[in-house]
Image 1 (cartoon, rainbow, N blue to C red):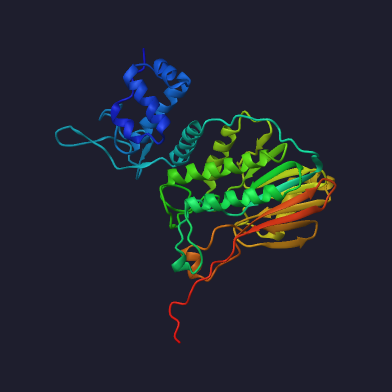
Image 2 (image 1 turned 45 degrees about the vertical axis):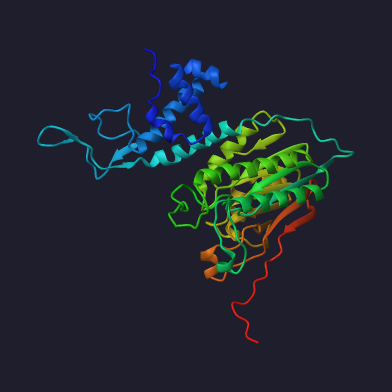
Length: 400
């Protein structure tokens, strides 16, 4: 039996222009195959988009594919343990109060990430950068401190700087340009997001744990601009380094979005063999390179001293092979280095200024992004820092 075209009532719930284009073609042409041909995509993609948007519409109460004999709409579950369909005295069905399935929240985000990846397209690989000499014994690592894309800050309130999604993108791109330009011609470029790349974990404008946040725009736009920022950084590094490795760490603000960001980035560079995006599942990530063993974690749930034993436990063989070991952390928004027995633990500064809550507590720090160049035989070659000047504010009143 041929599948019916989507109901036009679900079109307003498309999250991207590509989704709207595909479903409109499906409605007008009558089949998924014809819609796929018209839009230059696969039939399976058309069917997948239709199912995805139907679920989004169902979550908003638009259920053209369901009748009133259903207990709840797609993506919902009954609350308070009820399982029987309630009816009026006339025998008419009553929809019971339902809540969104817990598993659906993350799935919806992943579906959105897939849609955004479709819109962004695929990176077209170019030739390797032409350099007089590539330093095969060097690795240049850029550490993106908590970027907090989507955060809103008002400089007159915080006595620091304004901040929003566009400023996050602009500041990050300038930092990347500067650090890549000053880097030696290393064989490998390592890009590390140490967590909290986005301010909010969802369109509820909250952290993962439910703390309310000041945001500047819609969550969809945040993901869009944040994805472009990550893609820009990688493309810029490809102009300098023959290989680029990307690590995206889950933060306390954005563990679900971090998974989505890794998915979007991996999809965008899937045809570029020079780029490797590590899987973001889990909270600890490790890279072994030469005499170096590097660990990556956001740093919000564990003390630096404990991280040393975690690395020794998780990476016992690599720990024995490598004499140079370090952890890279975020979360604290300021630079700090602890030299512990067997391992260095480094917290990285961030480009965002304090938001309203942090300013009210008196918290502030240098706005910076850092590159560390590592030697394959162990030790560090150099450290480069891009730092923003601190703004100067006038007194509320100056009495002469």
